[in-house]
Image: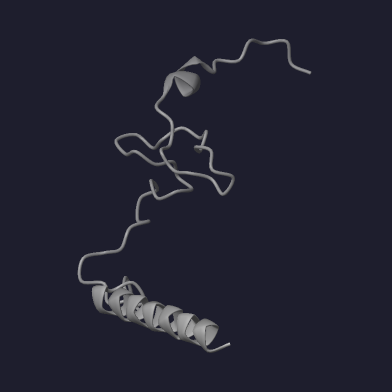
Length: 88
């Protein structure tokens, strides 16, 4: 092994990434300089969608209209379940 002392002070003192992990904790990687996320969670150069990018929102699953439609379907299914319970 190497007996030299490692200079980890600047890395340990740098701000941490603000992303959440799947386990619910926060990411422990250092944030990219000038950004709030690490290189793995969107701080890397070129990791964001470019202006005018047509692929940034491709499927429309989270548009306001789609969310409202899913909410209406969920409410309708709930009413149908209640009606079926009263018919038994």
